[in-house]
Length: 494
Image (tube, rainbow, N blue to C red; front, side, top):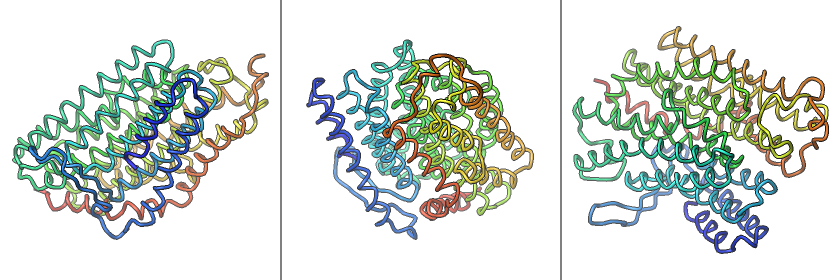
């Protein structure tokens, strides 16, 4: 699953610019093959086992004991499945809109898929870091080559922010290797660390993963990257790449530095609440569709960091392991849900942009009169983004709010305000685009979605609805690994 899409990307590059149709079909076949491998990954996964499964271990750099070491637990499997599904939908969505350097574009998407799966499966810290950094290259190229008028500025800003943050993680990983003598992530969990050591490592990980999430106040690269990125780049960035920050907190911060996490959970909780409340208000005043949805992503990822770090606080203050599990589970469900909803919202923007070549909200109006099927999908995803019960947007947020309430009712109240503000900016966006009289002559000439767009939006909608109505298969998949993380927190309590 790691190398199949990378091989497909190399083959697409070898086809050259002149064979655009062949490159599209080749990329789609490799992406579908990788998606097909998700089936045995899920069906062969033992949901009662909280440890790593499907382990693959080879020597890589023996002099430093660095190994090519892969495996997957319930958390990894859920995120890998999201990655493979989103990649197929991204390629289908880009079938017609991308006409320039098609082979390079689809190759970038496949390279991204391979290294992102590598991130979620890496069990060696240096291998994780290599995959973590390798993601930046194809996304940097996608924004810089196929992006908007300010694409160079946005791509450089994206690269500098995320690269600088990851340097802190590298320093922390090197320190853990020197202290424990192993690059294996599981071995790092057992390295004895004093409180000052844990605090330095905690902030090294915090800076790195906070930029990736992104958390307030290091979120400013995200709106620029989204606005300038092509639709496919925005979908992958929002649906998958942001989740790597939350995954890093679960894989590194929580089990390696639990005591420092207990000590500084209040800081991350406070920053998450600021993101949820303040950034919601920022989203309200945006006049660009992509920028509004980008700020919305910061808000919804605030639920993820809140759910993770409220678990630290619940164990430290009350010894409430069950509530900590609820917060962690809510954070994971929110990551999967946001991947589907944000991917769908950016796909909807792409549908409109392909027809009118503008992202300004004021340039639309009354789209439902000429694009009724599109309007139905747009309203559905807007409702899901607002946290409507029955959609996946409600499930994760509700679990995090419940866990927050057990820490302090005021925290839960602050979190719940996003259900109002989220509905405010999302439904106001939908109202200005979808409802009313036809806005202008250009809107009157727009054609409804074709079969390709129907497939993309339909699959996203099915995922959002399935998790919203029946989240149990997803929570059952992740529960053993989540329970083990919560148990590690309880066992490490000072």
